[in-house]
Image 1 (cartoon, rainbow, N blue to C red):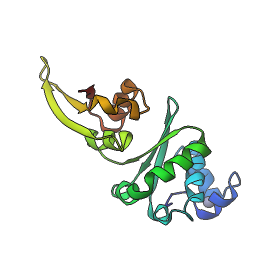
Image 2 (cartoon, rainbow, N blue to C red):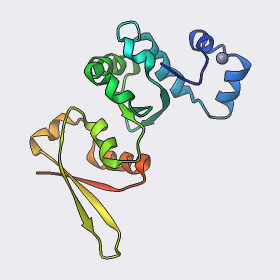
Image 3 (tube, rainbow, N blue to C red):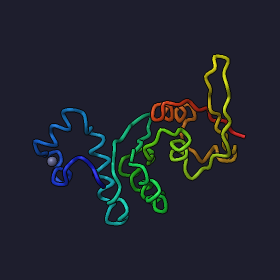
Length: 169
Ligand SMILES: [Zn+2]
């Protein structure tokens, strides 16, 4: 995994070099980031595409860990993602989702609920001239998402800056 923490420190953590200590002190790298990076690094041998994946940061919220990766990295991992997540979830004792960096709310939601698919999106104009995107998902898929819907909507908003509403058809 490509990360801003140097490879030596990744091996020796919690012993870190001056450079990496600075990154930790400044908050550029969190303790959670290091935990997540180490778990994914250990999976590199079995899943080589992880070596080319750029880790941006990890976010922990309501029993979920989101691993943000660079644009294009999600696609590379897709064929092996389910296996990787199963192992990472065991190690991290949490639901884990890999999300590609994006400002597109649909894209982020897609990564969060994969392999469940989005049926369609409607734009709803509100009286104050703002709009909301209603994302439709098949009700048959509801039980496969494993995440609270309000929570999902909140994460999408935090990552993309746009509000969506999820509805089940
Ligand atoms: Zn270092």
